[in-house]
Each structure stands twice: as structure tokens, then as C-alpha cells.
Length: 525
Image 1: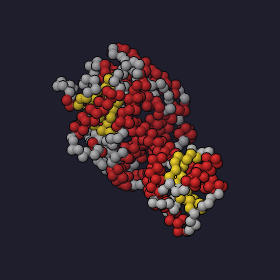
Image 2: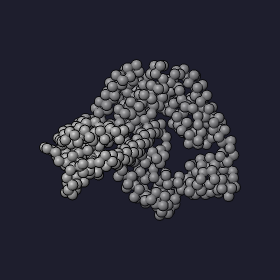
Image 3: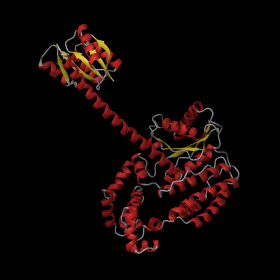
Image 4: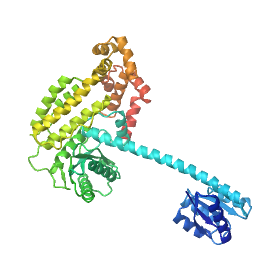
């Protein structure tokens, strides 16, 4: 439907034009009539018509002056000029305001209908273009939100950042040594609210914090929703300290959450300011601890926890890494042995505190699920430890979930070719920094080099040397983002003994030299 405003100082002309429109153009609604330019401007700004028919010669504010005003305030409104003056200067004076149609009185019905239809076509095209632009903008915003969520989740769960997330981090202006801290919202819902309640809160938090350029929201990890804050990105014109700004933000969120979700329980924990990726993860762990301290809808800083709180966050990191390595390799029996050791260490280090164990196991199985997805293996969501409090119940549930993971891996690796290729990929990921050859990797995979080269290309869609080069260059990009690493050392660490050769390969793959890439990366961060 198209809204139309008729502007003419003669009533009979307005009435005649309205009649023609209503009888011949069912998609056009005449929303108003004005008898001079001043009224036309007031009505147009109130009614927002798609189309205006404007007489030129009117008392007071004439049509040309009215069109010039409308062109500034309502640039998308189309105008058809109508006049009894067949003079070039009049016509030319309105062309600069985007007027496309010019009718001379007396106008024939067919001329009027044709002119309006032509303008309607222009409006339709504008609407389609705007719709397309809005769809692209919405898609870009969704992609950005997903990348932000995935990046925060990867930081908090100590997962390796892929190329896309590294690129997103650089575009977001976060360098490897940016000052950042974590805030964790711990949410407790009643049984009726369920998972849908968490989604509603997560969506509300994201919309609420999107206005803050320094606050990045992640997904729920168990009962905890992480926010990573980077004070250097904020406009701190108020002169507030980092701590004061953090307190103000969390207090505002909790007060609004209490009004929005009165039947839920929410607390906030705030970690300490840290200067590296590992530090941000540590701040998240501190925030998790602090989130368990305050009363409902209250916040607590980790540094304010009562005396006697552990200074560190004890966790079997080495055992976890061995376990994830065994899972990645598909070493089923070894993974079971290492997991048993992991559970013993975790329970001992956390002193059998159920909340801590639940959180750490949810994080661990989220990482396992991520590894399965990388291989194209789909499993239902893992985790679900928050309803278990007894240590043995938690252990049994964890073993059950581990069996789900390992059974899926065992089946997946049963494919002879797939198993060989995956073994080769794991070997490449662990030895790319050496002078690695196709023959060495083929021998490890248990295949003839020529046959291995053939099936690797078929299964991966890329040659062995291109795959190895891609691994090395991606690692080089990560190292180049840290100014502490010199180019010669980076070249050696990724398997290139000749720095000049490394530079040539890097430029061919990335489109710029290592030095240029480093400059762009540091400037962007």
C-alpha cells in the first residue's frame, strides 16, 4: 500500500485528483489534502506519505519552497509536481530536489495514472533495496553476535582460537595484552522455567549489554553466563575507576534482572583485571568463585572474598590436556585411564565441593563436544551436572558421558581411510615445527607414501604440502600478533629454517609480508 498527500490551493483540483486515484489506483491511499506549502510540510511530517502531488503556484509557501523543505526532512518521499505553468525554469528548479515527474494542468486521467504508477514502481524498487540492505545488516549482526559468543566461550574454556575468531578479535580491537576482566552471572531457575528460561535471560543480557562497547557476552556454561570486560575500549569520561565502573554495571544489571525475572535467582561475581588471554581465563575462574558468595541479586569481587579463600584456582590442567589429547587422537582405552586420574585429582583439588566440580566437568565436556564437532560427529548436548551433588553420582554420570564420547569416536575411527587420515592430521598438528615430510607422516599412518598422498587429497580436498603449509602459516599469524616474538624465531618454530623462504610463503598465502601483517595486527589491536 502507498500513502499519498495531495497539495493544491484549488479544492476542485484536489477533489478531482482524489477521485481519479481512488477509482484507478486501488493500492494508493490518499491520507490527506493541503491547500498550501506550509500545510503540506506540517501534514507530510505527521503522516509520512510515500508520494506527494505538489502544485507549484500557491499563496504563501509555494510548491518549490515546500519541496525543498521536504527533500531535507523526508528524503525518501517521492514528489510529482503539478502546474499550469509550462516553463522550463520552473521545471528545472525542482529537479535538484529529486522530482522525477512533472504534469501540466489540465491533466488527463491517463497522464496522472501513468505518472503515479511510475513513481510507485520507483518506491517499490527502493523498498526492495532497503529490505535487502536490512537483511544483510541483520545477517551481519547475527554473525557478529555468534562470533562474539564463541570467542568469549573459547577464552573462558581455554579453547584454541581458529582463524575466524582471531580475525574477529583483531577487528574488535582486542590485543593479546589488553587489560580485561570477567564478570559471571550465576543464574538459578525454578523447574518450570527450564532451559527456555536460560535462553530468555541470555538474550536479555546480550541486548542489555550490547550498548557497552567494552562488554562482550558469552553463552551459559552450566549455570554461569560470562561477560568479558575490556576497560580500554570504554568511554570513561566519568572518571570512574575500573572497579567502580564494574560495580555500577553489575548493580544495574542485577536490579533490572530482579524486575524482569523475579522468580529466578541471580548473583554476580567479578574477577580481577588481567593482561593476557590466560589472565582473562583466570579472571573468569575467579568470577565463578565470587558468584557463589553474595546473596540473591547481589555482586561480589573476587578480591573481596573472605580471608581463607584460596589464592589460586586449583585444577588438574595437565591431566585435562592429556585427556583431550587422547580424545582428539581417538585413543579410547588410554582416554578412560586418564579420565579416572582426572576425576580423582579434580575431586581432591576442589575438596569435593559440588558446585566447583559441576562447573569444571561442564567445561570439560563442552570441550569434548567441540572436538567431536570438528570431526563432524554429532551428539546431544553433554554436561547436565548441576542437579547432582553426591560425588559418586557425579562420577557415574561423568563416566556415562565419557562412554558416549568414546563410543562415537570408536565408531568414527573404524573407517580405515578416515582413521589413517585423522592419525596423520594429529601427527602433523604435533610435529609441524619440524622438517616434516610426506614419507614420515605416511609411515606414521601405516600407508604407502604414494597411496597416502592420493587418499589425503581425496579425503581432505587439499594436498599434503598445502595442508601442512596452512597449519604453519596459521600458527605464524598467531605468533605475529604477539610483538615479543621476533620473525626469525617464528620461522624456526613453525618449521622453516630459512626466514626468507618463510616470508615468501607467508606473503603468497596471506597477501602481505610477515612484517606488514604484524604492523596491521598491532595497529588493529
